[in-house]
Length: 121
Length: 201
Image (cartoon, rainbow over all chains, first blue to last red; front, side, top):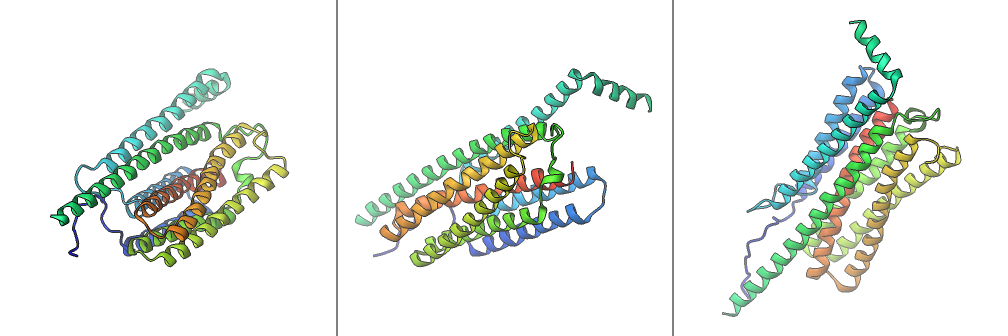
């Protein structure tokens, strides 16, 4: 029987992608761990750097383990992922913003602290 | 003529599989929104320790690093199981699924042990807002892992009994998506809860 070739959304999985994904993930995890434990840098700088390590690993795993962006034709999978990212960013940052704002307006102590810090400027 | 029929049949099957996989993908994306809400709650409450211990006092980073490696490696071996399934190598699928299962079980055991010690020391979810949000976020991830392990055991039995039929292969694809997805969530728990926590950020 002749083999039948059919157009298919998912391309065949490749061994190389999993290996590269695993090696990069291990590297990023170990890197973040050592930066967190062995670096005496400013805390705000550390927060940004560690956040970037997490985002890098997120992209690596989405691309190489979950195969986002490998599909052909209309990219529904990628579209759903981007929609998810938008919702997640709004949800997380708006929550933190609203709660901090509420905290500031509801506690006179913090308000005074803030005013004092402004006086020093 | 019969070849055309066979091709049409195969195409229909592929389309059905693609639809199922996409449907499951949409579920995973909404699950992300669930985790995002729990991350937002944690971000808001993580400073409210009510005089109790903070993340800096509680978390042991080397221990968490071992947990992380168990889960990350299991995500990789899950991928190896999928590669074997693609080749139709049933024994290999079973071996890699077994390894993935054991690594997942190790991760879950380590996490439960951590929880157990915290509760025994009086630092349970009832201690403070910080600990409530911590246990909810990390516990929800742990619950997903537990469900994933049960699913994996069932898929192991299916593969053993039925072989790599199209249905079994499709379900293995969904399982591997779920398992990789849980590792993606863990990246953020590792960074935001444990690394930031140990630095008192």
